[in-house]
Image (cartoon, rainbow, N blue to C red; front, top):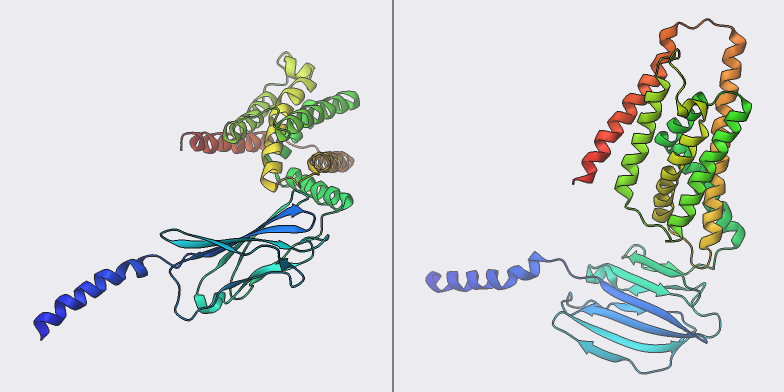
Length: 331
């Protein structure tokens, strides 16, 4: 008896192992607004299911089926598709998802393509089985959100701030300072706009390396002997501000692309993000000038070596970023 049961158990284990080797596939619900309140529905479900589980999509109660579902079955799943009528409001303001996910021990994927161009995506589970389809953002809300993101990005970017600080040291006099900051703003605004609008396409990793290199080169220039003849960069600090500002603008564009642009509001989001960068930049410059003015009022005779510490710190950080980001280029 034992001699016959062992091979049978072995065969059963081998046959059942594929089921334990892969988790159950999630179910997928896709909704696409067709206009005039009509919605195309596609529901994909794995053929491998937990016995007794009853998973079904949750759709707006006011929607009615306009066509009978059609089914397409492949080796792993079955997909049902139909058209439903939801009236003029469409899907905005509704909640969609699945019921029965807990018993089935799976997650659900929801994708909703709205008529206004927005794409709503989400993962639902037994704890949170529905997602809400929000109203379109107002223009003022879009501007506020992206302006805040611009401010946060420039004030959180140590490499950008170090470069601006170096420009402030390089510039001599009020006129030179205004020209330098204006040139940097012009440079980064130009490439930010061109890159976000897909007129200019540059890989992000080389740009990040070149931004670090710009900080390092500026630190080297500032560390030169003050008694040496002034270089072109010291005579015209707006030149590096404009040239390297073009690079920093491409870095800003990469950040904005990571945030994503709202459908139909790309120009507004771009303008607000750039405005946020400018506001953050002005706040940093204002703080820098206020601190310098306060230090001058103290009338402290600082040792000469203390002036070198910030420059060497800036150069060391920039050199580290150069090594770090150059390593990322060859990964």
